[in-house]
Image (tube, rainbow, N blue to C red; front, top):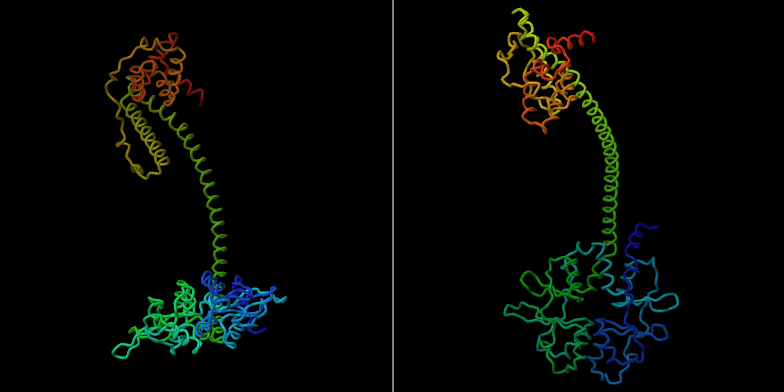
Length: 501
């Protein structure tokens, strides 16, 4: 198969068929057909008898009637139609270019299409072909000046409509451009009279012999410049539903005429083949590029999916690690804080004992300061871990002299007696007493907060005593009435420690 086959498939005959033609019978009157042509904005009518095409009536046929001044009364279409018109059989594989060859060969603008049984399918015209060719983008590669007909049939606005009609018939043209000649001999277009205008004038009952052209010519003109593209010309024709444009140069002087037929005549099939082949090649290249881009996108999507899976796995691992960290911190808080509070409390009790020598008091003070320092380190560590803060004081190096005890020299000013706790439940006092013996700081504070609703002032006082490590005072307040006054719970704590050891 030749290299043109893809083009023929793209620009096929079937795409250019007008499948809604105006169909009339042979015995219909010309006046009736004129009304139908105006009503349907059609340039032709197919004459059909018993489903067979017997003729065609076009605007040019009516121009011939008007030029010969034939009377229209009782004039049947059969007597003035073009009989046995050139036709083409329906063929899905037939390309547009063979259709163009038939139109040029027979100098026609309407090519009826019939099926195998001879019945009419539709009509191919320059307009329907241009609608197909336009989709290929070929028209934008040519200038109007390359396509236009420079031999324009002209006349003045004083010429009669009958003269204009006879001029159309003589030169076999579809239009006459009405012009004005300036003093410098420049010819400027003023209007245009087309075959369709002749039909409209007949319908209006205008007398052709005495009517001047200026009263019926179409204006303002639809014009195009000589350097514009054929694509633009085709768009103007389609938008305004016209079949021709007057061409002017940059000075506004008449340069030529462009019609649907001249556009098609200017399209060289070989050149069109080459152009379309180039366009198809470009489409193939773009398609390959898009395929490559699509393949790359698919690969990227797979990579993104893997990364997302890895990210989710990392998130799950981080969540598990965070859970372990929280459990570790909770355990660290309990296991370190509770014995540290006990160390600090009993170090304070021993420091105040009058039985200790000054050297022992100094050593106990060092124990207290070191414990307090460890408690601060623990709190900073917990705060740092919870808030992800890097602000923590530098405690890498220190001297014991810098952390010597700063235990209050004077007893605390809060004064409480066991009587102040008499209204509280006995179980509560026993629990607080036991927590104080064990040095369980958190439990002591929790028990104290439990009585805040009952007696806020008492809760505040007990909380202050706890934070000031007044364990001896608290033991005395909460001891059972059966306990020995001399023991006060300190010996019990020491005994418990020895038991644990």
